[in-house]
Length: 133
Image (cartoon, rainbow, N blue to C red; front, side, top):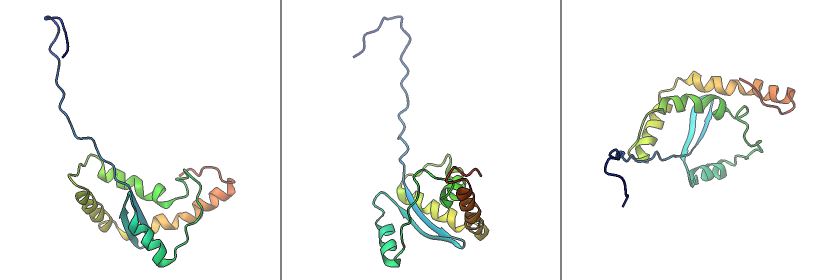
């Protein structure tokens, strides 16, 4: 209970909105498109793929978006696409993700992969310093 003076303005009641849940995804892709889309937190499918195909997990500096193709090429357009959307269920989100990936032009992936060599070379030339776009 709140005590207030009779002449105090009426307190506004705010509409309660459900907070936005966040979902983390692992996306493996190459020059031809998406190889694997796995929604975390457990990432069981990702671990199975790594073991099944014997993929080596390479050491990677933390917080280096200039070197990871998903960070510098994939996540920006994906974030812009999903901006303002709301999903009732995780399955709705996954469906939208699959639809977005399926409708990307194959050149989108090729351009991202082809830019790796020059970005990595810039990092070497800068002795590990940040690589600007």
